[in-house]
Image (spheres, rainbow, N blue to C red):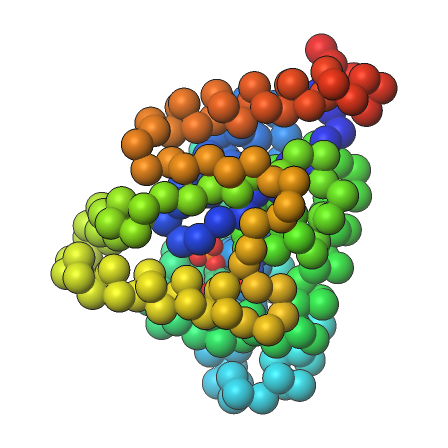
Length: 232
Ligand code: DC
């Protein structure tokens, strides 16, 4: 399968990026982490001391900023104007500020245009919040990943620990609830399941099984829509 567009949406901690990365590897597709693009812009806005409440300035900055995603072993390298900021964009301060700038319609417009451009040749797996609803309403296959709140908090806890930090699970749970409320409650491109998206609850599934289920679904859809693309 050489040219499909696979859209994956879902809330924080649903396992989107891990599943998307593995799926892309199996299909030999490119993985695009759209959240990293919003984080990258936010990192730069904080660096230059921009007023994050001023949508027009953030939009101007978006226009003037180059954001590149490059494969780097099993992960990706995120470059802002050529500088590697892969680690910095995961910091808490950046994370919290990102949900602020990602509500701006004019900023999303720039990001969506870039995401569509990156996918122009097909053969991509992209994850985020609005991929199946706004960025690629005609995506070949759409998934909506979800998981129970306590499982998502636990995953976040392990991630934070692996990064050498320590946080209370109750605090992380509250943060996730807050981010859910922001992502789902915002006016522009809120997180929601696209009508035709296939929902996978990842709470009790090992990641390999999640990816198996996705791959099977893709192959089934391709076979059903004969002529959509080449099936190996
Ligand atoms: O998936 P993530 O945690 O890296 O996303 C970071 C932030 O960007 C989060 O606040 C949601 C937002 N985001 C978005 O608004 N639209 C996307 N397509 C992806 C992420």
